Length: 118
Image (cartoon, rainbow, N blue to C red; front, side, top):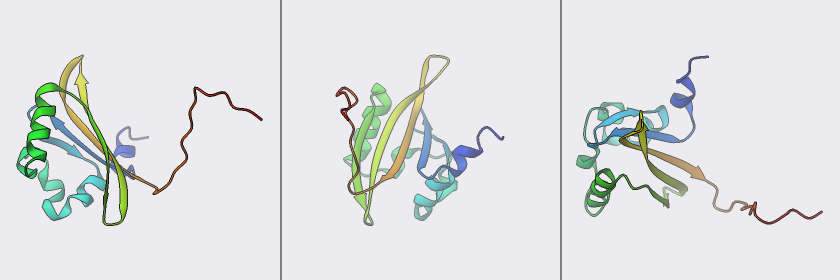
């Protein structure tokens, strides 16, 4: 099995940037999501140039501090979980990975701290 093929075809958008915000990789879903902005041609550009204020300031702060950012959005009738997290290479901060996961309007929530009863 090609070890990175699953990433290309994963049904959520995956975008990776370095510590300065330069886009290093996008999977197929991310390329399709950002097709109107250039899609795969965005690789090698700085994601700060793609964000208007106040998002630009937020992204810049995340890059500087390495702090994660997690939230939900709805666009085009699709609700998504946006999970932006720092990634590391050999223990050193290397940039950010953004996962954009479509989620159902309503979904179950399980509290694993509460024992199941039958």
